[in-house]
Amino acid sequence: MIETPVFGASAAAAPHHLASEAGRAVLAEGGNAIEAMVAMAATIAVVYPHMNAIGGDGFWLVHEPGGKGRVHAIEACGPAGALATIERYREMGHDTIPARGPDAAVTVAGAIGGWQTALELSRSLGGRMPLKDLLSNAIAHCDLGYAISDSELRTWPQQVEAAKLAPGFSEFFWPGGEQPKAGARRRPEALGATFKHLADAGLDDFYRGDIGREIGADLAAMGAPVTRQDMAAFKARLVQPLAIQLPGLAVYNFPPPTQGLASLLILGIFEKLGIERAEGFDHHHGLVEATKRAFAIRDRYVTDPAHLQIDPASLLSDAVFAREAAAIDRKRAASWPFRTGDGDTVWMGAIDASGMAVSYIQSIYWEYGSGCILPRTGVNWQNRGVSFSLDKRALNPLAPGRKPFHTLNPAFARFADGRIVSYGAMGGDGQPQFQAQILTRYRFGQNPAAAVDAPRWLFGRSWGAGSLSLKLESRFDPMLLARLAAAGHPVEEYSEAYSDQFGHAGMLVKHPKGHVEATHDPRSDGDARGL
Image 1: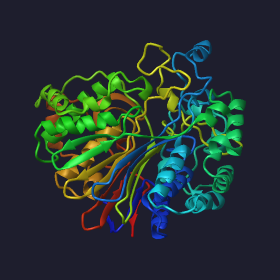
Image 2: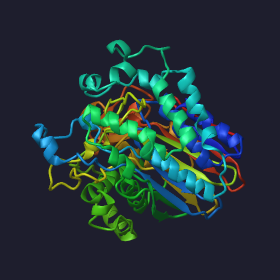
Image 3: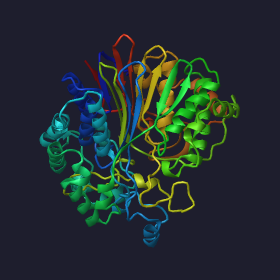
Image 4: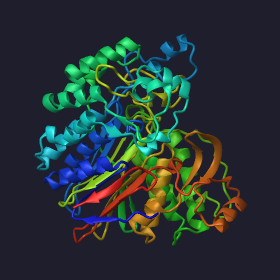
């Protein structure tokens, strides 16, 4: 089932083929990688609404053209609304923030602000495509309708009854109260009108114009804690990415409030183990144990960047990597009591002919987000605020204006020989684990398509599965599973050869001679398309 890799001077990869086609079309018209990604982000927000929406957040890594181009990071995540207080939820009788409905719509949606900031960066680097052209593909799918994806048809919401009670959920997602059947189509007319208005008025209108006013009115009418003023105050921002140096390459990821720190820690710790080949016990045991060490550090420190207790870059040193690697038993699995987080999202990548590259994540947190569809605009609102705690003493307590912990983290690598790599995955706590599996496989010599196709594992709890185990797809060597179990790993083999539980990943590699090798996950509805 290995996907045939795409080769060309430029390419785009996404978990839905209509999004990758939107990116390819922009590249074909002379647009750059940022412009292609905005078109992809808009399209996938329409055709993959169970995984992402413009009512969610986004994170960008952008590599400027050139072999040693600067890497920019755009943080487009919204804070908790002015009415989102611990007291509010305690008075309502909640011990935790509800996962569905208006009370789950805790934070401002940042994704559109990220598009706006990315396009400002694009223009500074020579981008010139009009916003109308970038949104035209998404608008066409709203006007003409689209086939509901296989991924959505097989995705059952957690807390399904609560989701069905969320305002607008049943009318939009499950007309008649039942999940759509294969072959069903959808025409999101209200969302299409929102995109048309933004194409004319500009993306800032989402926060400070007519669209922002309508969003504020809908949120107020349903009783959500995000206000019109919260929307008007939001701006995405450029931040400094985190980075580590490994032999022959530099790897970049996102700083807090995301778990990008954990993704880099896994790679740095694993490197100190000195493992030299893929797929054996040492490879997988080493990554699992590195994950445990990385997540323990993540859970101790990662919070709103305004409230950090330590500079996260200080945790990405050779000394820390060596210390954590030394604590790993090369033969036995360690115990690992740490919290877990669910999350569904989309990762997409684009690289243009100039060498500009984008690694991008867009999400509404849980599948279907809060379940709330705003009637005036057709926007599906996220439930990212579920990751806040109602305990004031917690690392991430709920408070107005505070940013929640994010599982989202786009990744990028630059090799000393001139290769640049945009890669990433969806899947909550699985994201750092899936990133580590595909990048180490690539470094060990597998091509991008083989590295992404290969069977994956997930350590911890997965979406819809409460068991605390090492979950693996069915294509692993039985001898490897036996060795992992003998070492004390709680092995749980899935029956599926390719399962959504193990994320949708992708990878694009631009080689020094100019061609791009690109692939997206056979577990998704997507592909890679190049020129």
